[in-house]
Length: 119
Image 1 (cartoon, rainbow, N blue to C red):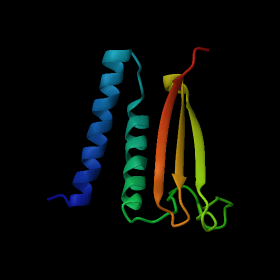
Image 2 (image 1 turned 180 degrees about the vertical axis):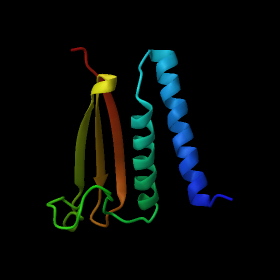
Image 3 (image 1 turned 180 degrees about the horizontal axis):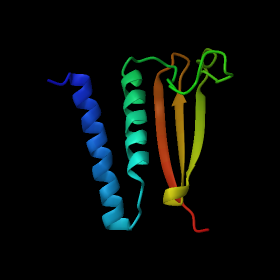
Image 4 (image 1 turned 60 degrees about the vertical axis):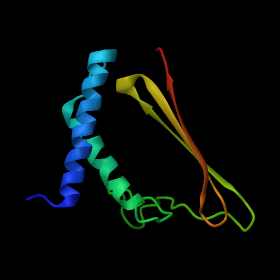
């Protein structure tokens, strides 16, 4: 019998496989199965830690003291906007994410955007 956590992980992997199949069927975009599963597992781990309502991000490949930056709250009566971007070669796209938080660490707004590129 599987634990609830294992069932959730299996559901996440299944969803990722379904999404990859749709990308192939609808957009003729192929992703290697090992990449699909690795990304699904990484997403699941990050989701689990996000459920703890902690304001720091968990990165399983980083270790204590490796120079990784940890998010800190802005000063009183200030808003902090964090922005990040990633390039996805296999999809010929770039993804951008933005998050605004107040001095209590509460989420004010968030946005993601995908931009396709042709080169």
